[in-house]
Amino acid sequence: MRRILYIVAVILVIGWLLGLTVGNYGNIIHILLVLAVISLLLSFLDKST
Image 1 (tube, helix red, strand yellow):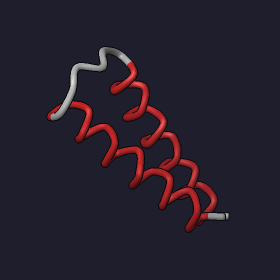
Image 2 (cartoon, rainbow, N blue to C red):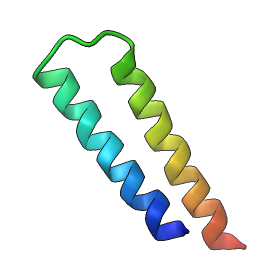
Image 3 (cartoon, rainbow, N blue to C red):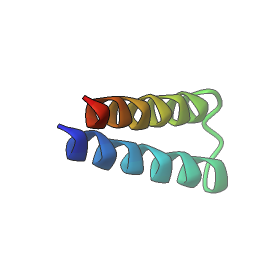
């Protein structure tokens, strides 16, 4: 489970970076970043239990 969340977070961060540099997508880009951070936090919390 932790590995899947980490992979999802990496994909979301890459999508966020591409969205900032390639296109003008508005607030959806920042939502991707928030989802990536949440995924990382969940993976760290899952790791500690």
